[in-house]
Length: 279
Ligand code: ATR
Image 1 (tube, rainbow, N blue to C red):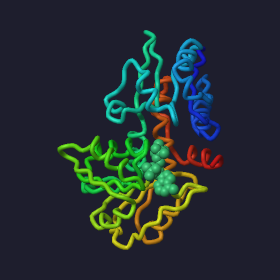
Image 2: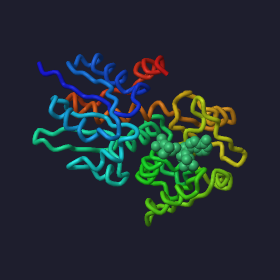
Image 3: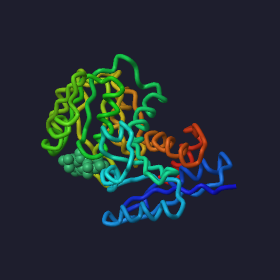
């Protein structure tokens, strides 16, 4: 019986929960496979990718700070990876070529869909943050059919750059500093935090939610803590919330399917509880 090998590479990597997640699925489905975390300095990414290929790895996950560089190292990339210009899931193909995709869009969308928080009336999204994570969220929102996205970010130039890059005929993108968000609350149907604010050891995202409709969904891609101050504030005033752990869990599905030849590994309460013990 073949032992399939996969891994996650990043710098640093010790905090990654991906090994816990994939090992849990490997055990659950009785698959002979390994999934390890490998720390790779940014200067050594291409050498390490070649080395993994030579060692018989089926592929890997790519995390910070390598996602954009990995995009340039792939021979074939999916449309979604090309939209974001970043790759987080790699498969080494039998012909020696490297195939890359980005599953953050899938992870973010599935987290909302599976929690029944998406419907056809969602039109206006408010996104905090304009970093690497924000790129995938904006593309996800566009694929979900949002027609207006407002990006609020501490550094306006980064928000402007994203707006310019991702604006389409069907989706208007406006931008401003963090305080610009408040004037967009009234029409907002989905509010997303993609900044580090609210993460343990960071200050919270400060915002008056007074103008936010009670039906607006509030979500955070931060999952340490699971209920961020933003989510807590939204929950207390009665808004539906979705925590960020689901995005991590769902984004792992496509990689697992490719490397370990097992379709539809389940994201369920058992998996959530298993991962929660490591947060
Ligand atoms: P990632 O790839 O995880 O998105 P990033 O590119 O460093 O990481 O982006 C982090 C995001 O959090 C950015 O939107 C950043 O705002 P700036 O573009 O102004 O840097 C935001 N962020 C981080 N720390 C922040 C802070 N203390 N106050 C406000 N925004 C912050």
